Image (cartoon, rainbow, N blue to C red; front, side, top):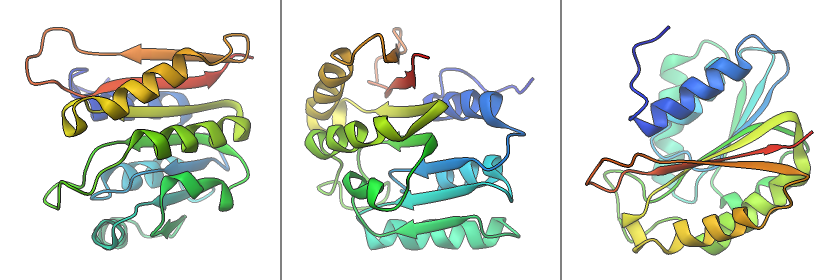
Length: 190
């Protein structure tokens, strides 16, 4: 057992993924928002040499930071990075075991460049048919970067998914004052 705190939302998502997917072969994983590359590196490590990770970000800086991090920390290449919006993921993959969205803006960068509800919902919607039997989409959604607009659009969209086809989980910290991100997890209900 690790000593990760569940209150660290992104670490909690990593714990869930590690628990569910470590040791599996030929995994198809996506980092929909590369940012500084921490999630991409984590997914590459879980996927191992037999799996594959595809990463996306609309900012050149994010792709460069992610590429540098992966080159420094991996002795194998099991990834492809695309300087493109996550709304176009399905142009590059045909099946999906894990997708991670860490929404908002790129740390230490222009906060005016950020994810938005329309493209995020479009991306999630396009990924659902690609989910493998045990596949999941993990979404860390922040409320403060856009006054909650993206969070609201995602929440409303996910609440309307057919419950005979999908399970949607919503996890949040209820005793924090700093508006921490909230987690949505989507999985097939099979």
